[in-house]
Length: 225
Length: 225
Image 1 (cartoon, rainbow over the protein chains, first blue to last red):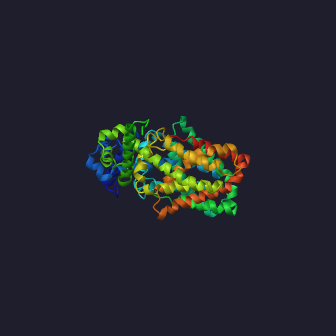
Image 2: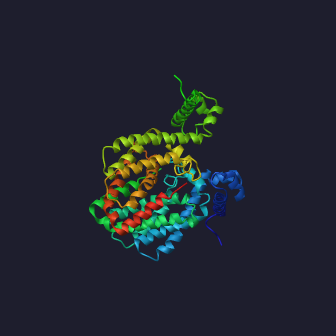
Image 3: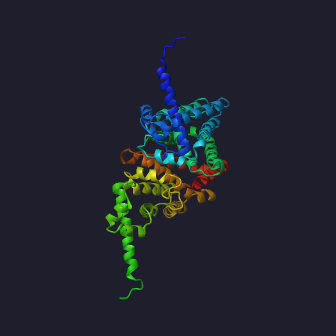
């Protein structure tokens, strides 16, 4: 009948969660630019000062949105990853569930893109501030690679997850521009890329191709904002 | 002693050129956001109304900047293209001179990136409004491909210039983030990409690789904003 933890943190956690949920729902309804700490506080039923107590800025709430998206993405992907050990199939699962998870955000994606693309933006998916959400997605790609049966060279395998994360961002950038029905143009681009990757896999054991691919992947993993 | 054309268009052309030059110099000095039609008019020594007479908006002056960059790019590239008929060497020339031409703009590139990345922005390099500048760069890539000695399949050759333009945009995006000395990280990425392309060329005649590459290039050429 006695709880060790006091009720205060629990109420605090609930308030924090309510503000976070209100922010996400306001971002989806109104987009990035038209969502303010004031509208978020109003939707959460807290004072503006209280909202700022939990989240120092609107951008901190965007990070909540990023983490929500990554958690949903990982959940959908891991269910499907359990069903196959083919490398290309597993990469397809991570890329496709990534896009599916983003579907509700397609309408508001252009506004976010403008806010997040600047190299010095804390919202940039390659920024230090975005590392919690980014690390979740990189870990998901690592699971996809490490859980697969394949004969890729070990140095390529080590570089792949981080490089795949940058490729995922490039795919999401293309998806943001995609006005085709059901974003079929993006799906077909992913298919074509995976088909070429599948064709390239055996060649990655040839010394020249191996060295070239390793250098390319290494340079891609080094991109930071 | 008698000229057919009246002096009026000539003065008009000079005023237009002065406004265009003032805009470019203000963009370089102050960036996109802090340049206004007012500051441009002041620098050009014309009234704000007069500046608007020649250019309906600041964005029209960004197009002047784009065309200036593309004209400079084409001039540097064509001098070097005259010296080699190797396909990979010629592509390297177009990509490298493209980056070199942009060097003076590196500091202001992030501000432009935020303004031009939105799919509905007239400043987007893939927009209808940007087609004059874009067509110049695509023509340059076409010259680089068509003037080369190579054995690429004809359908690949036809798709390359437009696909290379999109890859050029991706390279410039990476360059915008590049804080390494002399933007060496971007140069090395280009090198690695060209080395892999050189290795891939012979395989493009194999039916499976050919079909996969054609589909990939086709999908890349279809990206529009």
